[in-house]
Length: 227
Length: 292
Image (cartoon, rainbow over all chains, first blue to last red; front, top):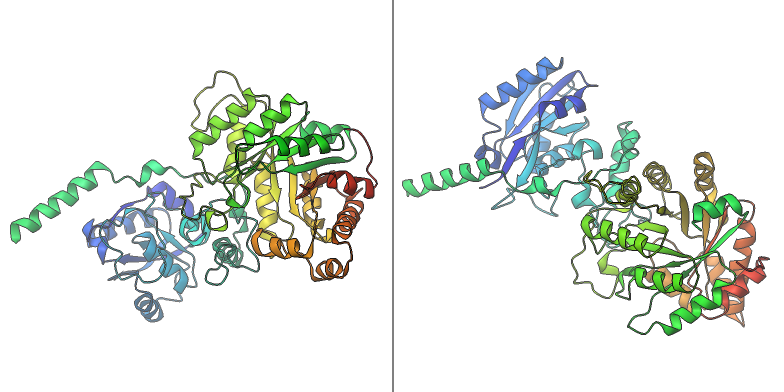
C-alpha cells in the first residue's frame, strides 16, 4: 500500500470551483490513508479552505476505496444530500476521481495530484486510468484522463484518426478518449476548455518528492519493528 | 519561399508528397521529386508516415534544397521528445528548411515496428507552440537562444472526422498555437471541407485540400484498411472497380476534386502519387499547367 498523492495548491482548486456554490467533499480512505489526506483533521482543513472560498460544504463522506465503482455508485445513490450539491471535490488518487466522475451527475474535481501508485492499484479493475503524473489535469478534461483514455496520450485534442467516437488503433475495444472528453465537456457547457493555450506536461512532477519517500521509509521501518 | 508567403502571391498553391526510401538508396526518390518539381510549389517530405521506419524527412529536405526545390519538413512527435524536436527544428533551420508541418504522428501499432516505445512528449499543438517560441528566440523552457529561427509552421486537419466539431476546435487551437497554413487529410467529398474553409478564412490562414490519387481498387482497399483518418467513399470504389483503366480513372477522380477545390481553397496538396508522371497528369487534367 504505497499510494502517494499530494494536495493540490488551494489556488488551483479555487480556480476550478469558482463557479459553484455547494460542494460534496468525498475522500478515499483506501490507499489514501498512507499519506493521510483522508484523515479527519486533513479533511477539516480542506473544508475550512473551501468555506473561505465562499462555498458551502454540504457533506463530507469518507469511503474505503473510491476505485470500487459499485461502492461509489451505492454511496452516491444514498448520499442524503445528493440533490443539495452542485460540485464534488474528490480527495483520492486519479483513479478515484475518474470513477466518481463516471458515476456522478455533478462536475467532479480532484483535490490531489497523484504521484505514484507504488505497489498496487487498490481495487481497480479494467484498464489503467491514472498515470500518476503528479499534475492532475482532470478539471480541464471533464474528469476523463487523456493520458490513459487516448491511446497516444494526447493532451490537446483528438488525433485525426478517430471515427464515430472509436479509437483508430483499437476500434473494436476502445472509445476515442477525446470523444469521451468532448462529450463530457459539451454536457457540462465547458467546450471553452478545448481551445486556448496548449497543455504541456511537466514530467519532473511525477518523481515522488523526498519527504514522501522518507515517509514511506518510516512506515516500512515501523512495519518491520512490529513483525 | 514559405507556404504563407506563397499564399499571398499566388491564387492557387500546389504541393505534393514525397515518401523517403525504406533504405539508404535515395536516387529513385530524388528522381520522382525532380520530375514533379516543375509543376508544384513545394514538396512535403513525410516523417515515418504510418509509423513505418524509413529515411528521415530532414535528410531528403536537405537534398531537395540542394536541387532548388522548396521542401516542407514533416515533423512528428511519435519518435522524439521535446529536446530532440526543438533540436531538429534548429537543424532544419540551419539547413535552410523553412516550412515545417507539425504532426502528432501515427500510433506505432499501425506500422512496421509495433514493439517500439512511442514518445508523444508533445503533440501537434504543443509542437506548433514550440516553433513559435523558437521563432521568438527562446526555447520551450524560456532560455534565450543564440539566434532565433524564422520557420513557417503548418498543421493538418482531418475533414473526414466524425463528429467534426472536436477537429474544428483543435484547428482553432492550432491557429492559436501559431499554424500559418493547413494541409488537410485526403478528402474525396469536397463539401466536407466547408466548416474548415470557413474557419481558415475567418482566421486568414491558407488551407490546401488534400488530394489522394487512387491508382487501383486494391490500393483503395489498402488505404481504407491501413491509412488513418479517412475512407474512400463507396461510389468511388465502384467507379474504380468498374474501370478498364483504374489508374486513368484515379487521375480523373483526383482532377475532379482539384477542380472543385479551385476558388474554394488556396490550393491542393497531392498525396500518394509516387508513380512517375502522375502528379503532372493530375494537374494537367485539373487544368493547372505551369512551371513552378
